[in-house]
Image (tube, rainbow, N blue to C red; front, side):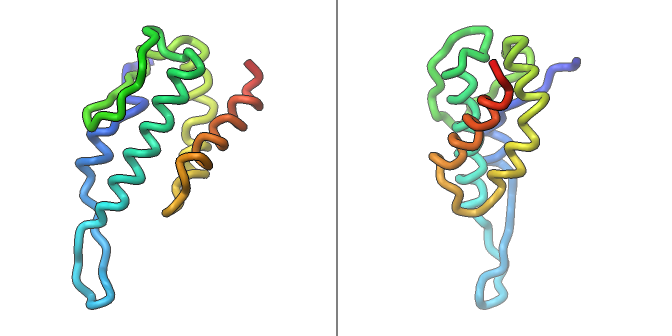
Length: 114
């Protein structure tokens, strides 16, 4: 499989999302960027905590954080392949807490059976 970014905080922070305010003015939705970056940080920390990264590392919440497919262990790749999109669909809700995101990952990990 070709390499790709599993965690890509820069892409989330660079994405321009606009909303219309109560006066019908278009403005940038910075909350979207922050929530999307948070989702990426939670995923990265989960991967590190479960030792699903080839090189064990502490995850630092920096705006340039990227984790590529080839940086995952074989188990990490299988987990991501089977669960990433499903998990992202469950956390794609405004205002979801970091704790809830992590709980949803943990449930998927439990079902994964490793």
